[in-house]
Every structure is written in structure tokens, then in C-alpha cells.
Image 1 (cartoon, helix red, strand yellow):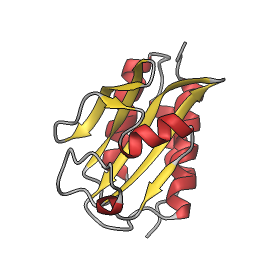
Image 2 (spheres, one colour; image 1 turned 90 degrees about the horizontal axis):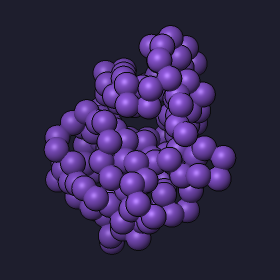
Image 3 (spheres, rainbow, N blue to C red; image 1 turned 180 degrees about the vertical axis):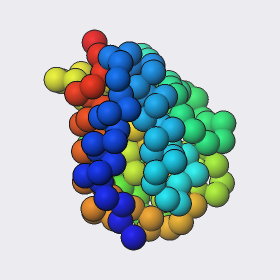
Image 4 (cartoon, helix red, strand yellow; image 1 turned 60 degrees about the horizontal axis):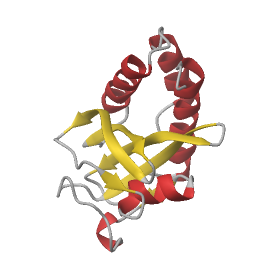
Length: 152
């Protein structure tokens, strides 16, 4: 069952009552992990250096760090600046398996103008977990995160 993303978006906007990127990314990770079913990881990777993502606030098992733009689903989202929705991560040759239980992944780039601030990464132990409606809903949550947060 697809969550009510409109309601979740309003709840997230109310939760993000500071402009702090650190507080808001931690709150967003926890909120998504709590409110979206069948996830085993939700969190942020930040552009720390050119062509390299570093681990940010997250919920789930310990994560891989760092992630080059030329590897994995997060790297593809950062490199192409486009959302990546993967039904079966095991079919991706350069997938980075931080948690062997992960089967599907959704990664949304976080852009501030032309600058890539980072990505929001969601993993699920269910193959094919993320639908087009989930992608649109999570992209809307990312837009709310950007609007409520000082990312400069």
C-alpha cells in the first residue's frame, strides 16, 4: 500500500522547525525510516569532495563510506543528478552492498541550484519495493527538506 505522501510531506514540513542541515537531515532520516514501510536503511550521503560522497545522518546498519561517483546506485544518482530507482540491486554490476539484506534501492539527488549537496538513499529488503508513486512521493519529501533547510 502506497503511503499518503501528501500527509507525510505536511508532517515533515512541521517537523523541520530549524534551518540546520544536520538536525534536519537527522530528523528526515528518522521520519522516513519510521513512516515508510519495508525499509532497512534511510539516510544521506553528502558531497564531501569533488566526485565523492561521504556518509551523513542515517537510520539503519553501519554504512559504506566513502562512495565515489563512479560506483553504485548512490554514485549514479550523484553523477547523473537524476533519481535512481532500482528493483533488484543484485542486477547492478557495481552495486555497493553495505547490507547484504538490501534488494531494492531509491536514491534522490539533493540539488541546490547547480550544486549537488548530496543524495537521500533508501534501501529495502524487498525486491521491487519502490513504485513510481513512491519515487514521486520521496522526491516531494526531498523538495520539502531542501525548502526547510539551509544547505549553503
